[in-house]
Amino acid sequence: MLHDMNPEDIVGDFQEVTLDLYGGFKRRILYTEIETSYPDGKLIVSTTDKEGVITHVNQSFIEMSGFTEDELIDTPHSILRHPDMPPAAFKDLWDTVNTGVKWQGFVKNLRKDGGYYWVKATVIPNVRDGEVVGYTSVRRKPSRTKVEECIKLYPTLF
Amino acid sequence: MSYQFTVSPDFTPSHLSGWYIFNTWLQNQTDNAIHLEMYNDFHEQRDAIEADNVDLIYANPFDAAQLVREKGFKPLVKSAGESDEAIIAVNADNHVEDVAHLESGLRVAVTDDPDVRMMGMIMLEPGDLDETNIEEIPSDTYVIVAKHLLKNEADAGIFLAESYDELSKMIRSQLRILVRSQISVIHHSLMIGPKLLDQREKIHDILINMNNDAKGRGVLESLGFEQWQTVDDDEMEFMIDLMDTLTM
Ligand SMILES: Cc1cc2nc3c(=O)[nH]c(=O)nc-3n(C[C@H](O)[C@H](O)[C@H](O)COP(=O)(O)O)c2cc1C
Image (cartoon, rainbow over all chains, first blue to last red; front, top):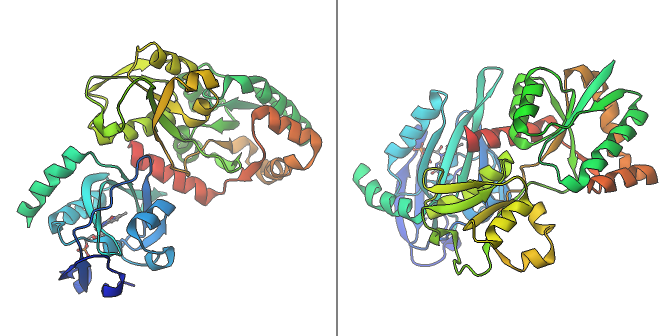
């Protein structure tokens, strides 16, 4: 389940905003300007069902997001949605994977403590016997040049 | 009926005899005639898989997708607690501290071991490096990758972590690790093909119990393994999805 964020979980000064999520969901987000840099050599992995509800996460996912495994499993992936991410990026993600092909992009993700981290994400549909049964996403460390480009580009996409 | 067994060509050379010992042991334990065929490189091995000339394989994760999805293979076991990890190393005299500071035109010594190459290339990306702006120095073995670094014929080398750790102390003292991957879920697996599938459970159980007697332990030792650990279908599917995500 997706809950509003809890001020007690937040580290540092924060701002508040309400996000409109898929299916008419509203979520109150508390976010700070504190960046956690992507750890060298690691991959952050998750799988979802066809609706984007998380079915599996690896240890790096847990460490970087700050959530426990229990808080993540059976929860919509938009639990990481950061207000600085333009909706067009996720529309593109879903439009792409729905046609059966891989999506790649740079994503700013929200942590449980209100901070953020940048990733280079790849999402693919998992096909079994010709049918899509879910999605896998693998994130790796992005280059700083690419992140700087996104920091300039994304505000123009709202 | 005789079955064909093969081993991913990236095995550590010092374990070559170990695989022959393992094959003899396996034939005795399972009452099957099994022929061990070692291919020179991944191309030759893939051709053999394509031609259905493989029934049992210690497979590189890169080949797992083809084996499972196209050839009906199933996983049996992996070396317990181990995974394939990659290292980017430089000459110890090189002052670069971070991959992000490496520059285009970088000369990278690399083997044709496909999963290690892939992991290495991913670890170079934070430096805005990819196939288009590095110069690859093809190397037959990891010792040769190290030699290219020592002779300054390469600026960085991509190693299988296990092989790097097995380099002599002398060589390692002249190198420096920039990044070591911690991916944990990419690994070689022993996999079984359609002709042997009716024996899957029997062979699996024999392998899992291998470390329980002295003879079996000795054979494992000659492979550099402590014991086998089950790889079930779900774990294999997850690894294949992950590899697809990274390669497709
Ligand atoms: C496999 C997979 C991984 C995803 N990973 C993320 C992620 O890391 N961060 C994120 O904000 N959205 C991610 N999404 C997209 C979300 O499902 C969602 O579309 C997005 O957060 C925007 O929320 P909304 O669709 O409710 O508007 C992922 C989707 C899939 C299928």
